[in-house]
Length: 283
Image (tube, one colour):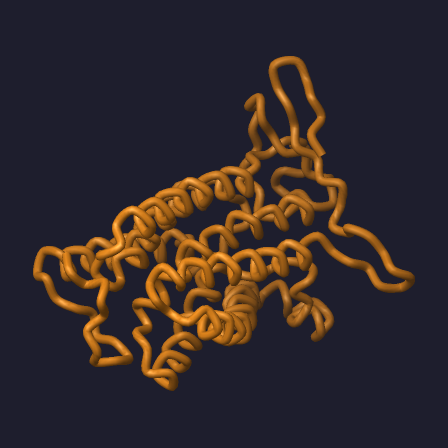
């Protein structure tokens, strides 16, 4: 909820529960993930039509992506937070509804699932990736609000006019006496919406892009924002003394730049699941 203050405002989560049906509690986190999947699939199907791809095929791939991405996103998170899960009940490893999935894990799982699917269907993995990337970043923008309702993934303490009130039981021990923190969920959601606008404009305006272009732009644009925002967070997944998301973001930025040089500087195609030349590669 937003509490309006003179010349400022603060974000205050109403809690993780959206509503209850008898003994069943429906959480905002789950609702937002489900909404992201639905909206993303519908959008990808619309974009597929503009590339002469069967929308039914996109719907089938969406199922594969969910099956591949969500478990890998959870596994990735648990792997880097294993020290914490060791002290909890074993079933907490699977409690996705309480929060704790990592987008980079989802990307890995989704990429594996998409490659297998496209190989079976003999369609370009890069073409399907280009179709899905605007939907993926839109889903990320929606899903980030799950962190708000769970009072998690927030930044360092701040007294900026915009700020996030974190309940005392959700604060890191070193910041237990602080009340307000950077709303990094909001920063990333807004950044992702901006990236979504860039991808949609590029996809719709330039219909003859070389296959893989949209995916490379996504890798660069999203990772630039994630690298900056991750530096503000207090709960980053760590690999030793390094923030995992920042390392991967740098890798994705480098890969995206190299990919664009490969496509347009060297004018070569990416290795793909189909040898067929895609009709969009005329630039």
